[in-house]
Image (cartoon, rainbow, N blue to C red; front, side, top):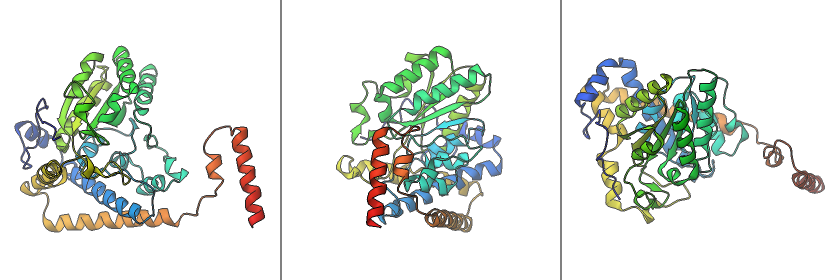
Length: 359
């Protein structure tokens, strides 16, 4: 089920990486560092993602949620935010987290099942990944409501997939945000499937963005593989939120190259021809590389040098994560409830008693 690019906000890049009239206007307003930062972050995210899949296959991290193919949606949107904004991610926003300042070591520790991976460094406003679908949306709404009541300038953004739009939390969060005109952004990366269920089986209307009207929100649908269009759409949503103009629902139409997670097999429900069309013709990274090359900002030597930097940076993060002391087994009990219930106390005592006998 190849998603249609119709009903889309005008792109900044065509499929061959050439600037459109809209894109040229944005391009002229960006510094050279900004132009290169889109590429640098997308390349870093892709290398990290590929390495993480390998680590999972080697048994060095747990089940992992890959994102390759969604780099433009994540990097473009994240670069439009500021350090004062709050980010509520799903379990797939590793790219967003990197741009926001979360160290790669922390991301790896999360996928290793370590509690340290959920302890965000001071000054980084990224919440730990949300695994239950859509629970981050009402929490982002709540953070934006708090910001409005406190008269702060921060914006709260929730990231989610198309499957989350079938959850009650989606509707409740958007309705509340619309009624109270909150400074929130709801960012949907619509890759066409909720695991194996195509979007056409999830929704009677063809797009996510048009649902915004039901809640009095601004809705926009962009090419999620166009990093400049994603950046511009999010930047405008941030401007509206800070100006008191209310929330925005952004639907970034994209496509994940791999499976839902490393425990999934997407070949069972996605046609080969569909995958090839997106991977070969609409890859977000190669599309942007072509623009930088045409503009004289990137050549082969520079590309190779940056890829080397990415590998070295990721190698260092892997080494740091794997060199940490193993967590005590008592973490299984200590980090579940704030106040441990009697049943867990009993289980912990039984484990400790059995461990002493075996020792």
